[in-house]
Image: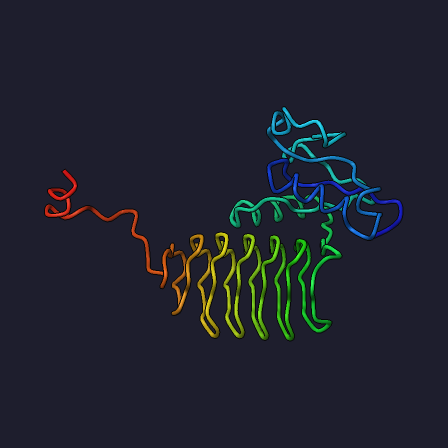
Length: 228
């Protein structure tokens, strides 16, 4: 990151506000000193919050990159995040890879472009993190783990040794993937869930052990009578 660049946070929701404070606490003061504002199409997103000057300086849809700009992605939803990243990069936007100074990362861990690694997160040996991955506070990836592009690992989640997340997977807080288990593209793992077997693409899993949630299922007549 050049000394003359400005840093803009994409999004102005709760996660964006967290990233703002993590920039302030980073041992590299460039993050705090270069912060220039947020990008968000909802101009009221920071209403009621007084600590985030200069606030929202442009919409995402209207933003045009300037020389030296570095964007930090603060969108949690994987599908939205990947679409915005594609749109902004097509305009010529450059993204920073933000790794907080309070992390534990083995030197041979690989972290992809535009990813955000938050305080307390850990990457063990021979791990691979794709582009635009979000690892929230105290998320961890064990040895030989793989996390695909656009994944979001919420706080205190764990991808154990040799486990693999496909593209765009979302893990809720305290969810865990057992060693060697693979999770398909754009699957969702509910909070506090334990995944013990492979998950197909697009499935939503919940529980201990995690099982598929079917939101389209119709209750059986007997179930309806019990509920009545």
